[in-house]
Amino acid sequence: MPDFDIPEEALEERFITAGGPGGQNVNKVATAVQLRVHLYRLGLPVHAYRKMKELAGSRLTSGGEIVIQASRFRTQEANRQDARERLAEMIAQAYKRDAKRIATKPGKAAKARRVDAKKARSSVKQGRGKVRLD
Image (cartoon, rainbow, N blue to C red):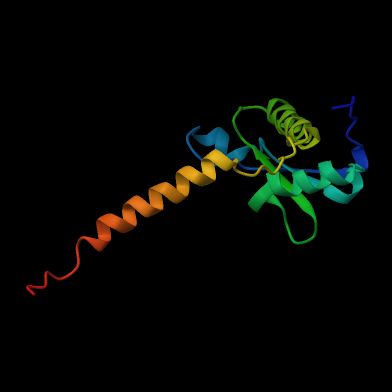
């Protein structure tokens, strides 16, 4: 991946109250971060854009935004950093190209083995017919 800078205008942050254990701190302080990333504004190349949509999965909204929620830490700043790191990781994965598959054909020997196996199986099944007493 080339050194990719995430444009600030593509990001939108919202601080929300986190769930789970933590007592009164969790109920009073909005420490969890909801990072919304406008996929179109990132300026990704076509292959990375397609892969990013695939990687985002259910986190991608119909409006073309990826929603990343971070509530692992107790402070806003740590959660903010965590969300941005997860986004950077996702972008790095999107830049990796999949290896192209090269179509191959079976060789003559493989085809012959397949036909021989079919003939052998056929003869086994032929022997299972009704027994006729002539």
